[in-house]
Image (cartoon, rainbow, N blue to C red; front, side, top):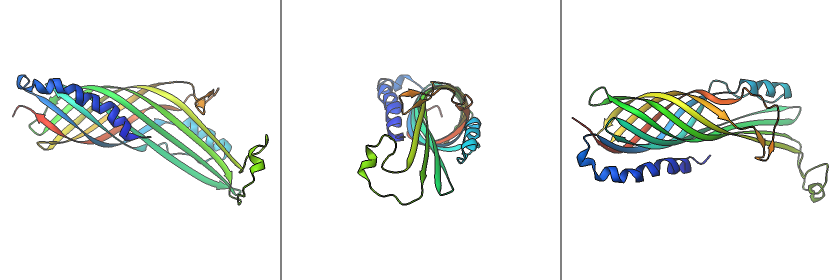
Length: 244
């Protein structure tokens, strides 16, 4: 996924729209605008997918979670924070059986906006509680091919029964709409540098899975969802005006 596009799409509008608020900060006792990179850990529901992989001799993927990478930004006005972010993960597993290479790859990319209440513990620490609404996509790639040598044969490219190479590949996708209650704690490392740890649980609604974004796939395992616990750590650079 293109994390830069997600970051720009969801964070820049917040920063641009904050211009009006920034011009009025002399009338606001607490104001912040910041953004930066984030890393995290996301644990979706994929147990049913591994059940299907075992049936076909494909490798299983981890059920304990995946490293996520992304970025985001936010604006604080008094005790209300409005932000946006983009993040995602990709995991790949392969196995060779009887000279046949079988590979599966699962990826998830999403963008989201969120609103939080910000409470101050001390001059250097605060806590947040709120909710996030997101939009993204789960993508599953399933590949199988022989490890025998390959030789070019243009005649096979036009055959109804074969291809140039002995290679089978499928791409399945599902669009995801999610809501996540979340809470976090932040620390000011410097006056302009803010570290934030956030945890939440994502609840999702998904469209029917499609093959190559075109043909709907019936009877796809219903237990494969983007629902799950996730945690992320962000390092934000910005302007922070607050009470001493």
